[in-house]
Image 1 (cartoon, rainbow, N blue to C red):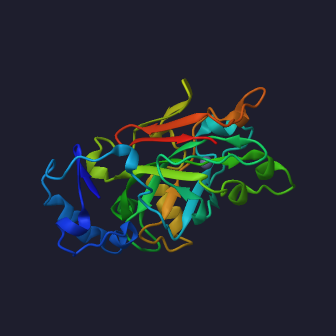
Image 2 (cartoon, helix red, strand yellow):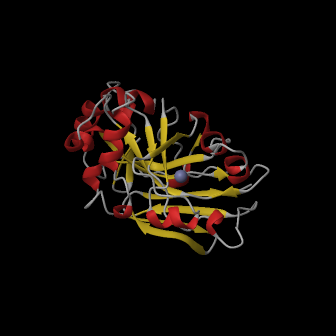
Length: 267
Ligand code: ZN
């Protein structure tokens, strides 16, 4: 679906079959898709139920995630801020929709609201000043983490501990950068039930989005449809004294200014 204003257009139908109904196929020709989308009048579609939205990138080829990328989060979890981005993965089978439930697993499950970058063009060695052109858009994400497994051994298990079923909900849709007044400075927050746990701005990222793209693409080919979780600000449960973790029934509302909100209930 293409969403403009308060209505949505069925892409396969409105494009007369030029684009299909599989969202992943759109990334193959994201430039063609966005120019076609520009021809659609806002409000020309039909109304739709927000809660019916499913994962906008259901099968990403690669998911990159950046650790300790807001200074205040580094200090709360007593981890030093790295000179280069600290990179791990969330395995693609962890992705979930914007309103899906999160099954908690044994251990200590924690929240991390994050700005998620969706890559729109396949490339390696992307220059800093060309990085934004490789972005399809932004989404809101939660980097759910099970801290016991993550931190138990001599070597941290970031990737495994953050890849349980539905530990990577994203959405509610992909917002293209032209929809945002200043895409590099957006309020980011996480509410648990009625309490605001995290509140910051994406301008506080240590390694900003273009730098992350340049850094990752100097090693890996970034492919259209890949995701990058860009890091979380302070306010996670691990940083509390004593630590405070998710329990069944908690509802996480993760919001980024101009990008939207995802709502996930822990079960
Ligand atoms: Zn994270």
